[in-house]
Length: 93
Image (cartoon, rainbow, N blue to C red):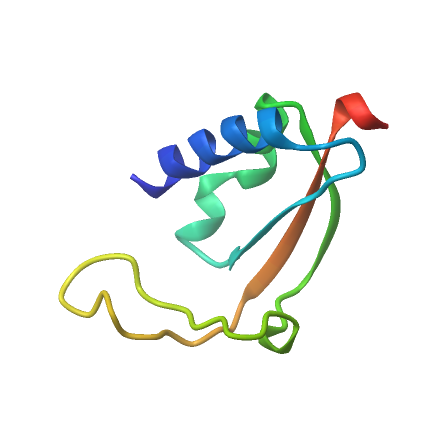
């Protein structure tokens, strides 16, 4: 499940983050993705939301989005309702 994957990602990222470092997560923010509660999941690992902005693919050269599973898993999807969340570690405030 993707929600569990995000939880484990934040746990690992929290342990690897250097002072002043940031964790960027770009994802859709409409249903059902908003049910993943990424801000809450990040907080469980000591990360807080420092910024949230509209996802701009131009800021990620070479990036190509792909669906995660199913018959069309290698196809792209519309990037509407996407945001980039920026997290920082509470220990490094």
